[in-house]
Image (cartoon, each protein chain N blue to C red):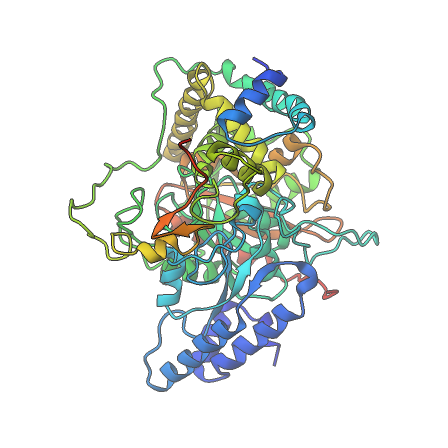
Length: 493
Length: 100
């Protein structure tokens, strides 16, 4: 039998239920894989005892036939989710040593569904980054290597880079991610896995360290579309503690899975044909169109006229909200405190924040503070909010002509560690296809489509109507069945 | 619009982040690059468009006006609140002296 840690979440769940193996065997297999993969730097904290305790509870529950949806499944949790008594640092020095006295709603829901925890996953500091290089704990190294013989260390993408690397390397059957402007979808594409960001408000933000509140949304990352559907069902639901939580029932997404797309119209936005995007990406996109046609869908060209303004809009709104959210890190209530000799309260704030935040976080706080400052608020922030309204309107019009939108996930395959760090704008461009759906609050998912000439994974991106996660998952399943993507990174770590 | 060292120092002060001269110098071109790039939003005609603050089309809910309405986020959890404080004294957060 294959190693348990190479199975999908669905295979683990069903095999455990059928009595093929115990939950303890599953947990031990993943604990061993995690301990043997420290070279990847995917986990910042390992919690093998938690995984074992939950496994034992699942084994007992199996005997009494009292199983929950995720009984026997250990998960990795992105370090942005508050976990009781376990370090939650958001990849930042300023939250060093922070052990929350409370549990995020999403991780609590996963626990209530029977899941155990393998550990906390590395990420870009405060989720600000597209390559995991801004983490105070150092970059996550992708388990993938290019076939050019150079052996260069590649990024798993970001900000959910630890999450993506963990799934790709068999260090967790499923993980939580968060997506503010593509932070689930771009790393999923870079590592050959599947990830979905649901409609804004589906998953409670309570207990998730805030980056940009009007955009942040949690979602699952896993090997397959079905695995994502299972996890998303457990994570979603109304939460009175989050004022932006959607008060709507959670559909049975796994049960509703169907790759028959007869009668569905797939929109191809002409503005997403961007100059300078490699031919391989466009070729995969065309292949994706053919796959969806094969599944019975009709393909229509659509227009999203404000596409080119999405990134600049995002890079005003997200830093503005971040500068406000990150004002809470002042050395008073938690985390780091720096007090200069004889310094007053103001000096303590300034010194704590200078020592605790990394360069990218400072850059974004500075941009955010600038665009919100007196005299510039309307010119930048209000202007960006108006353009955001137009971007949302573009999608509403497009969805009068189609049911789902297909695009590439990212403009390239994974790049090397250090390659883009010196140029913030080049880094920001990585999220060019992912950001518009975030601004509009729409459900969107990346599924692996194929490999590039270097043997590195490329993702296809599906955007659905508000609340239509089922449509996104179903189109994702249609691609998954046809792409037959089974490539895995060779174990070198 | 572009920023100079004086503006960057002013923003750093507003953001409560201590910065060395070298850091300020380095941020001037970086911020100008990014601000120059976002200037393209000026091309978009947004007259008559309402600014979009949230994508969720629902009324802001209010919590019941009851003390300790939620056992987790309500009161009576002082010790938990202070658990991670860099410095706590007599059940309060302690900070450097504010009044001379």
